[in-house]
Image (cartoon, rainbow, N blue to C red; front, side):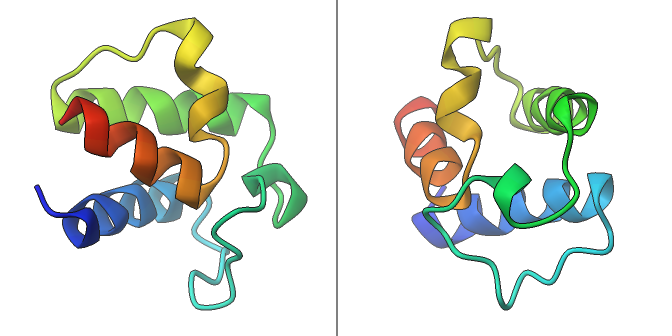
Length: 80
């Protein structure tokens, strides 16, 4: 997968969990919870959704790496 495809994958799953977010104004390096209403349950659902579609296991200790768009894309680039 290209970096762009990974970014689209992350955004797709974010929109699935939090459809109200505006992906055009999202700050790539800022944590999701600091940009929109995204609590710990939403984050867990986001991680679970990504794992299913990407067919990978994201260890609990790695979850904080996916707390921003930039972090999620960088993490997944190394795993996919």
